[in-house]
Length: 172
Image 1 (cartoon, rainbow, N blue to C red):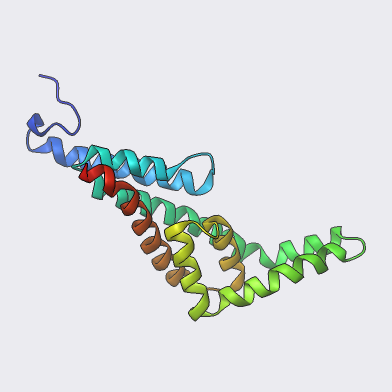
Image 2 (tube, rainbow, N blue to C red):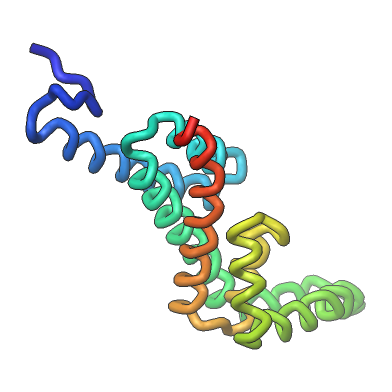
């Protein structure tokens, strides 16, 4: 007898194993899509909604994977802030590049460093994608936003986004 993943007739271990496997695949896909822009987590969420029974597990796995990937960006920016600024300053002969970068980076860094503006910006970015979450993750890492707060708000926003995308096909 051949059991398919997700087949309710697969016995007591079948559906549980299937949902766990789907959650792990979604987690990995979410992580990969957070780091590689060509991998589309939103399309995965829509397809998950069409699957129906395990859509919530898949949405949560995607959101967790995306959050983990964005935390990698956040942490890499946080740890590289000093060294990156020094490298840019050394490579810039006249200092124009540094001045231009500071003109844009400083206001963004100030905006994201405040909890009352930084956390809502991360939430909106994670939920609707504007501004792009990858850029916000990097900027938030350099701005000194708290890691736990960033992760919690990012996870909430990603869960909202993927739920909204999966819901129409799940209800159809």
